[in-house]
Length: 181
Image (cartoon, rainbow, N blue to C red; front, side, top):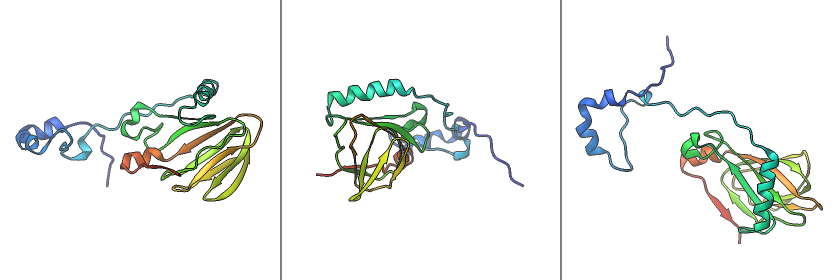
């Protein structure tokens, strides 16, 4: 018969008599854990509500500033409780992209997969050289490592909501981004 162990931090107790050798092994970037099952559990991830109207106001300001690309804004959300993963959960991150009328994002790729919901507007995405048309309410997927860009073909702003698996990749230390020339 098996049972799930209640995780509690017992490292002080477990290393009390062997601390001197543990200290010889450890340095600023290396720590010793004695029996992983007796470490503190991860922080609790709490529910969140993201206010769309405030996010949209921020997106418009970023697009107007044009510090990375004129007419384009991207914001992602994360919870400090996810620590290294910088996601809303330890494996996922969510955010918005904003594209002014007639503007296209720069072609780029990343090793995270993305699922998009078109919140406002219409246009198309070029994913690995092929056009995929979308409009408000549609959902589209960009596979990991696919070179892609998004184009606003309407007379109104485009807002895309996306969820990625970047938290998982960040935790593994392998998250990367590439911009096409």
